[in-house]
Length: 221
Image: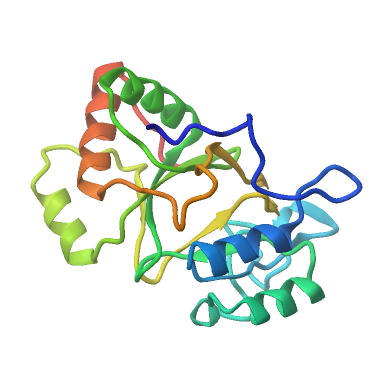
């Protein structure tokens, strides 16, 4: 069964303003799915397209760890409650790799077209995380050596593909960042111990074929 729950059912409770509770989502990821998470740095309140970190040229405003650093990511519910109890609007950042999913991401427009092509090909996908700029397909954990061998064997790989593996991170829904809202384009099915995700080889092969078949030249951003 394809993981396309998306808009029909909700994983999270809501605040009085109708927005999902970040702490509920963070606890689901950490304690139920065993995905290590930590709070991201917030967007700059004076300009939401900017980041509140010290880097004036930050390329992922509000969507990355800062304090604490990435190594602090945890599945400990007590720590998660403490973090979001003190920072209730902090974005949720997943530390990719290890026992957690990795991801393959590409710009939003080519990603939308690629997903349509993958559906037509009968490709089974798991959760897909979307921001206004990029979409990320969650995959099983992979090593840099495994990724290197995979890419070396290919004649062509779009330069706009990004790979989030061990030592990487990804903002998760329902975070609000300087890039805009982070949402599920393909939401995990509720009720399972941890969402199913495909192998990276299958996803990269299918995405490259889909982009080639649809004639999409994914831009570099």
